[in-house]
Length: 607
Image 1 (cartoon, helix red, strand yellow):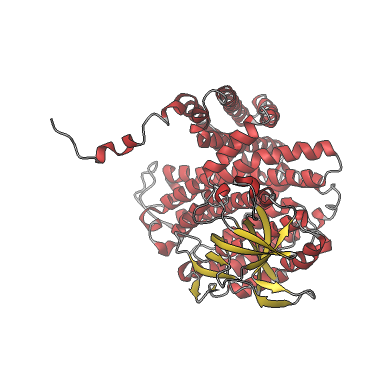
Image 2 (image 1 turned 135 degrees about the vertical axis):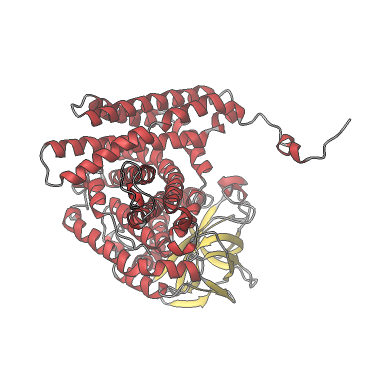
């Protein structure tokens, strides 16, 4: 059975060489970052391998149990959560005034990757604490901040975000949960579904951030407010009081992430209504919830990257051990490890190239989060926030879609042994499948990319980002290193395709919205492939320079350059196909009537 080993060297490369963590360390409040960087990565890797990874398989097999409104997590989870909280991992990016470490957001890239690769079922719990902390910190009252944030940071309590209802999946305009004023608090009634860690036994209290409607609120998204609804009410002195009127009605039986309880929560089942506290202003709840959702969407992208890397690691390990067939280029009839076979190499290289591109793009986006939050220059803050806004749907959408492909390809390396549960690779395939669905499906991310990030600002941010990519492509194309030059040429061609398609979408947006949005997901994937190629081209430049300078890690940089070259020929080449699909195929999507989808199942009429 494969065990998880954090790819610390590649993480360091992405952090230092691509995301520029040395510059982030110059931002206000980030001065100690470089002093603790290595120790944080090493300690996180040790915790992931030593505490979380050993629980992964048994937790997947046994899952959670539910009885009488209570959820019991898999064996070892309670102790692991206690250790996780005591080590201070939850408060890594939280300001010191609330008990956090105040470190930059960029460190969430590698640490979240390690937790999720080692045990995604566990990692989903404390991950939500950070979103709840950020939402309350930005929009909560001073009293709410003091009462709830320190206990969320310490891990004494956990947090959730409660959006989805049976009739309101991604369409939050249909939320029906009601909140009735009761003095300085509110009484909430209704039901929420698919609530991650909505009930569990790892902490004595759960702080639910809930979307609901006040009496007389406008219909649609403009009439939604946000409320803090504790599982157990908190007394004025901070101690826990009586149980609130919120109860778990059951947990879902799922394809994957079996160790993660996904709950149905009933508010007001006892008839009194669950007591809640309004966050910020009335009817601005969806706006506030997007604070959590954007953080969660970035984190889900990293989750997917994590599982893809674990699947890739597992496939490499198996390919080195599995003996099958002779080497096609050898006369020796002796069977060899399957890693010697060209098609297996192709699959492993495809996985490796995509994982490295995804990691680089995620970490570079995380770096911009820090500039957007902490730069003293307002112009710099706005520029990086615009880049983050553009990249979030790509990090969430493309990384998750591509990670499913990577996990599937890794499973293929195993052949028939991958399809059975005993080898463990099937778990990675099952676990990663949810990532394209929760926190907004890929279709939702694609609509956001085109509607809000491309059309709304007339493509200004996309154009500015494209110019940065073009600079890299031109620099690479003029390189004396043949591989780097070829990568630059491929990136330039892909950028031309992306620019052409973006212009086409802009021109068609006013005339035919169905046609514009018909291939929005392929457009998102096109962006992901090209943005990943941008980072791989940068990596190739650095690697070539290091090799030429006689760097002692020559073998690492040779592998980096070769992987970037493979990405250019096997992944970037997809961009031209995406461009053709979008421009030539968008009109074909809506051609059938609803009835025509079932024509071949209707009784034939014979004259």
